[in-house]
Image (cartoon, rainbow, N blue to C red; front, top):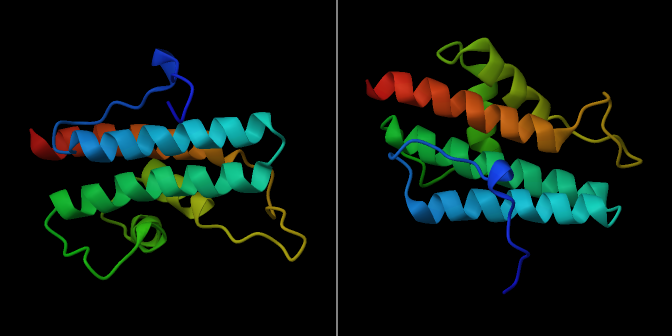
Length: 133
């Protein structure tokens, strides 16, 4: 096994519109982020957190009917951060997740991108469930 088992409380659960493959990818990236953080590699933790959020963003945009073939996870997060079609908590988390690091590889604000990724995914989950109903 490549990864330690993920504690059940850390697993992300999203609506059935996402495939189990996407859910696996999201949870693997969140686990990688936790492992990187535990090893003191905050830069890799940020990369993995953004990647997890990007997987959720891409899948959600696809479920909303957008063509995602020419965009990546960061592009999808930018769409969520800029569009007033999405609720403020989703836009704000996406904005923080797309924030650039400074030349010395630090974030310009004190923010936990792993926590922001989880918040983005959970808020997106709630919003997507409302769109399906």
